[in-house]
Length: 113
Length: 115
Image (cartoon, rainbow over the protein chains, first blue to last red):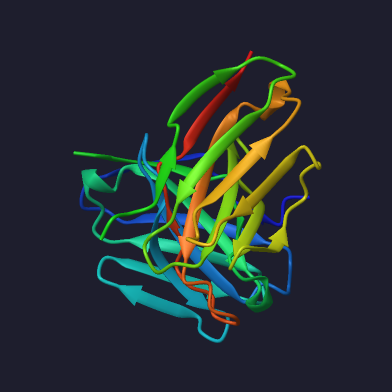
């Protein structure tokens, strides 16, 4: 039972354009959502998060949108840069679950110069 | 400050053997959690330790176990290895404060290959 799904295994965009990565979840108990980025041979690194009481959180070029009624969140990267090429994981958590995150399968983003 | 350190980085075992992986968290972090990453499966939660106690456990068989020491360092053990245990095992540390969902800091992982 995949509670967090990233339906696009890969995404390719041109440098300077917008990258939109999508994530869907099924567990209505999730109340905190995170995005992690992973380069080859490195561990995932935290990118941005959003609480369920908000519908948008912005940090520089990165914005996460949350649509609770649709159980959907998305990560927007504007403008995209070649250094953004990596695997992006969506993750979700319940407030009471401590460090237990439920991850999606990941989306490989490639930003072409 | 130093990041999360995992050893060994790579190892090869045969079916039926056991393996122990080690994780040193960021100084001051008391929570250590372990994740398994396999192709197409994302990261699957194994367990979390906080102050030497298992605080949370994922849906893995009893062959997967772990422990945490008084200095917050953690080990995980997999006994009777199966081919399907081949994966990248990631350790993550955090402050682990109750009721606070904090950022997890991941190590580079230990890549286990079971032949």
